[in-house]
Image (tube, rainbow, N blue to C red; front, side, top):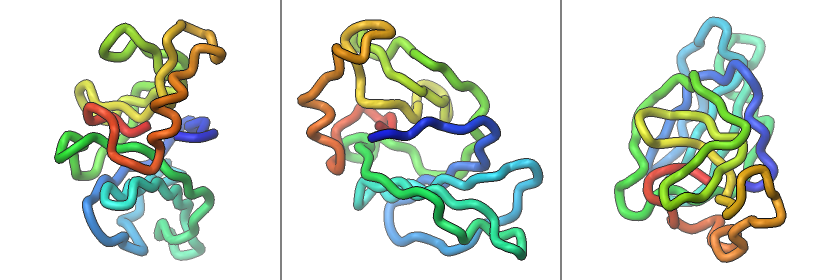
Length: 137
């Protein structure tokens, strides 16, 4: 993802293949709801409106989901967060947040730990297309 720093206390995350839903069930203590549109490779972050529904978009960006059906669908609560996380293939992701199992939200990967100059530019240029092994970049 370009420029996303995941805030603490994210709400449930909804991953879906098709159309977006304008509201979601209220979650106590969950300030944000993240929706990923796998068909369009986009992420939209919502906060609650005055009625407690997640209808107010606060940020939208392009992303890369997994190729084929590798990115799971469903609703998830994010619990584990990492500043730098070792990924498959001995590469590193920044601002990683576990969705479920080995599936994470994270930056485009880097070849060096804590070294932003090692960004995989070829992968960065794939943002907006399905390109990962299931994670959401």
